[in-house]
Image (cartoon, rainbow, N blue to C red; front, side, top):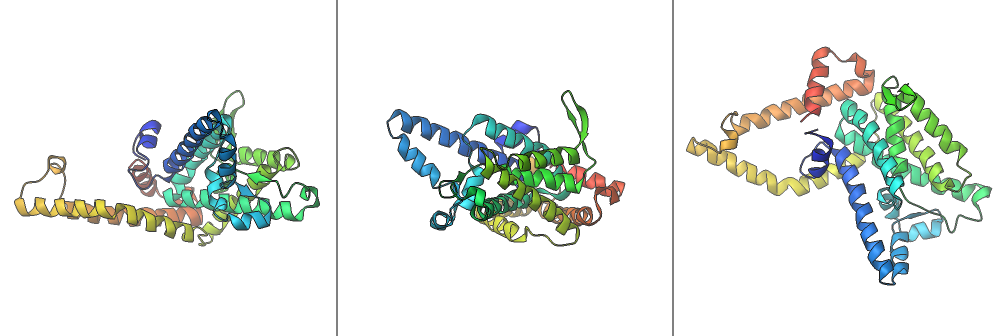
Length: 311
């Protein structure tokens, strides 16, 4: 991370290794964008157009309808309509996402969110199409919200470091494993209520979060496909910027001078080598955490991880 919350959020797309703030920023931007569109269309008398457009981004439980809009399995997890809906989701994403970022890194945090959203959505579709209780509502049921991905991160963090304690208002210190268990039980109890589809998706996301961390400890990273797609787009978008940096470093070497911003630093080529080595060390530390837990790290490894998390 690079600074305070608002600074990180404002610069979310200027840095790599900060998927937590990218996810929060995307959700907030989509929410604000849809709110503006909704207001203008409703005032103009075209509110039905907004509803139709939104339904194309929400995830339907009815299989024939889902087949006509397969993209909704991804788009639904970035949609919110209610103010409190997005606020609570983003708060939980931030609180528990910080733990995942600290222990496993930015990419695995993104893996958890995306996989949790996908698995939660599929679990919702599966239950709605198999359970007799939902047979009358399956054709009209639609879902939106980041909750499945957020639940994957909440349960993933609780599985990874169950004894981490949060200070809750009125209640006081509570281990995050108890917070996760409470919300899973609450979702299960409400899975036959008014928001049954969302609660079922929560359970699917929670299950994915537990399984992801469990498998990661065994050396199996289920998020590799998601990670590869993310790296592809990152490289695609940053290619031009990397070329510019290379050009400047060569100019500095040939002239013996250089830009003011590099005046107190080593040669850019040596900096790149140091960063590569540091990234390899961090990857090794993260693998060790996944296999043996955070407490297995030496003081030096914890220091390196802490310093890297502040970048």
